[in-house]
Structure formats: C-alpha cells, structure tokens
Amino acid sequence: MFLYLKDVVSLRIDAEKCTGCGFCLNVCPRGVLALKNRKAVVVVKDACLECGACAKNCPAGAVTVQTGVGCATALLQGNGECCCGPKTTPSCCSAPEKKGCCKK
Image (cartoon, rainbow, N blue to C red; front, side, top):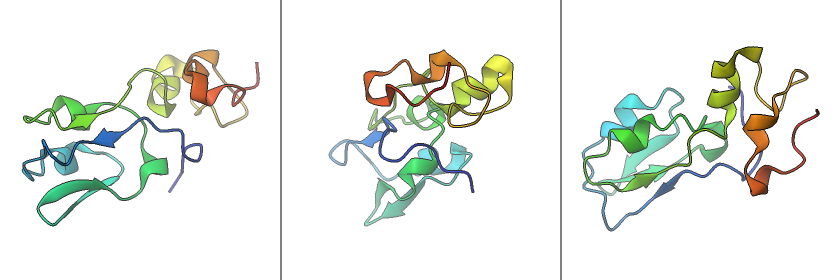
C-alpha cells in the first residue's frame, strides 16, 4: 500500500463526538480507520489521501480532515502521481506542514 508523507495528514477524530456508527470506515478507500471500544480510531494515518469522504459521511461531525491539499487532490488534478512522486503539482503541498515536499 502506498503511504503518504509521514505525519502530515490532517485527519482527526473527536472521540467525544464519535457515536461508533462506522460510516467513516465504510467510505474510506484506504482502510485508514477502525472501530475500537465502539469509537472510530485512525489506524494507518499515513495511508490517508485526505479525500474527505469520512468527514462528509460522519453524521456526528466527529471526523475532520483538510481536503484539497493531499494526494487525492494531486491525483484528481491529472498528473497521475502524488506529490511524493517524480511528477509533482505544487497544489498538493500548499499546506504549511508540507512545505518543501514537492519538486517544482
């Protein structure tokens, strides 16, 4: 499985808000989340594409992720590779925590 840049993904889960419904697990294309003790938890954070499906499908508003700056955006913009790859797009590294990850 392709992993994203280490420790830069913006995915967060508020355990206080999480109801354990599992919707976020069902829509995640990468298996980033799991249920533990009836709450959603992040298990493979660096595999997250920051696509936002989990947050958009969380009825409790417990999941947050900054969409539009991750690998999914780079792939969808048409260059065919994540910002970690040889063909890069500056937009995928626009967040301050990702500064310098792209070749321009």
